[in-house]
Length: 345
Image (cartoon, rainbow, N blue to C red; front, top):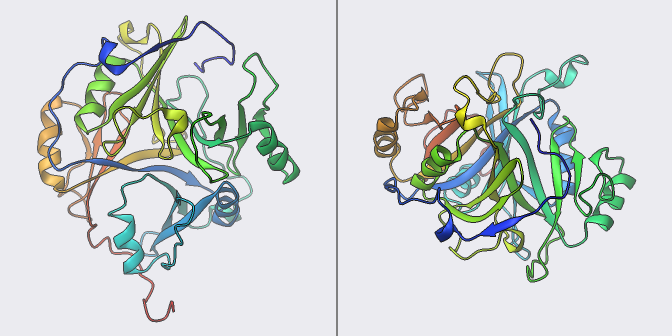
C-alpha cells in the first residue's frame, strides 16, 4: 500500500540511535550509487520533461542490435558546463566515473508509435517502486510553473493533509515528488535530483544490504503505520541532511507489519505486465569481487558477471528482489553504436 498524505507524529533519529543500524561488513571495490533506471515510451517527451526539471543529458547508449537505447540524465552543479557529446567515448568515460547519481531512461524501439502502449509506473497494490523526487526552493512557485507548462499532478501542494509538497506526473505517468529544500541548503540550481523511493518488506535486511554497498542512514522518520529511511551514497558526508543535499537519497519505505507476513512480496518492476522501474545501479572497482561478496547473502543474481552476451556486468537481487546493477568503474565495452568523436565536433 502507499503511505497516505496525512500528517502524523514524526520521530527523527540519528543513525547511531537506530536499532536497524548495525555494523555490517563493507563490500570491497568502493561501491558508489550511480543510477536509477526507469523505462520510457517516448524519449522526445521524456527528455524534454526532465530537461525542464534541470537534468542534463550526459550520455546515450544505442543498441540497434537489441532494439533499445538508454539515456543518462543528471543534475549538474551550477557553473559546470557539460561540453561532451552523448554517445561518444568521452561521454561514456564521464558516465562510468561520475560520483553522483544519474537517471537512466530506457527506450525500447517503437513504443512511441504504439498508441495503446504504456508502462506500469508503480503505486498500485504491492508495487515496490514509488517515485523519484526533485528538491526546489519554492514548491508552490515551481508547481505553478509546471502547471502552466501543461503538466498534470497526482497531488498539488495544498491538496491533501500534507501541505507544501507535490507529485507531478512525468510523460509516462511516473510520480515525481517536488520537495522543499532546507533553509540552509544553499543550492543555486532551480531543481536537483533528490530521491528514489522503494518500498521494502523488512528494513533490517534491506538496510544491512545497502549499508554493505557503502550507503549510510542519514535520517529516519517513523509514523504510526510506516517508516521512512533516507540513505546516502558512500560519497555523501556522514552528517549530510537530505533536504540540504545536492545528491539524491535512496528512500526506503516500510509499511509496518510486512516483515512478519511470510508470503508478502513487493512487485519489483520487472515482472511481465508490470514493467516500468528497472533497477538501481552501483559502480565498483571490481565487479567479480563485489559479486563474490554479495553471493553469500543468498539473495541471488538476475545475471552473473559472465552470464549472457555482455560479460563483466552483473545484476544482483536485493532482499526484496529489486535488481541491483553492478558496473565496473570506468566502464566496459558494452557493444553500443558509439558516436564518432570527430563527427560530433
